[in-house]
Image (tube, rainbow, N blue to C red; front, side, top):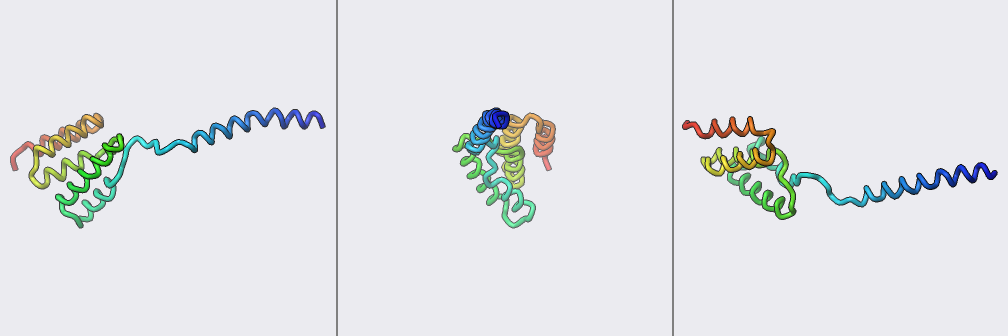
Length: 124
């Protein structure tokens, strides 16, 4: 019987340590890198064509303000989408600013943003 009690005592310490580790992980708050807010529903609305570009711009701008107020980052593509919406209503200056912001936040998007900026800078 003594041997059995030693085995239980030896497994108790790692079990307590694992429990404490898991409890610490569960206590973490929202640790997502990006704040998605209204981005996904707005992109969905864009593809469905149920809202005009001005309404979508307003919604995304409000969402961007809320994201920044929380100290978070917009997700990849957020500012590119906003730039494309601005370009669709003829606000090319604001579109270029959004494309530049997307490049700055996500350097891997540079080639695509450069393509969009070239396309928008050519007269139609």
